[in-house]
Image 1: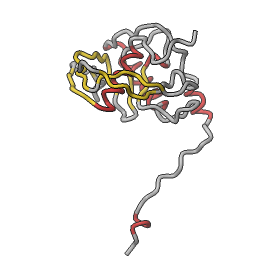
Image 2: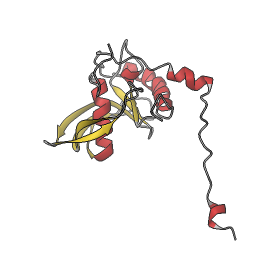
Image 3: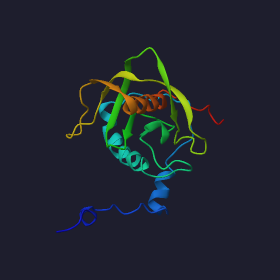
Image 4: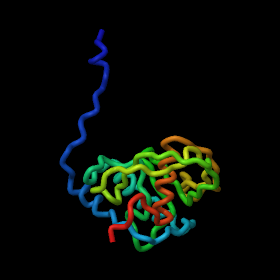
Length: 176
């Protein structure tokens, strides 16, 4: 009989050296900008699917002082025609999110941002509980009907941070 240590499969360490493919992906980041994202429509879905793959990969790549991200918003990789969607490291594609309700009191939460990889984390006021409406990309390649979700905790913080990106708001002032 194997002992417990032999039964555990250990995931190999992530390589500290980035591949050329990783470096090319990191070049997709654009400077923070003030362009508000436009809503995703059916004709954008192929682009959403293609760029969501890149954004998902970026969630796992280190950038300066950050080892990755919980989510990446489309405006972080496109300053010409940013679309209103973000991708989480849990492989969700959140399309056209809108915060429709929230608690009255905020709680300061420490946050950093991949758009400002050289700046330290700062406290940001966030609502603990929010109600959001959003869509997703269905397996058949179409846009889902709008759905509503009540969320709190870390998921709420991620939705607020990424929705801020979609609205051209950042936790730091512009570097311009």
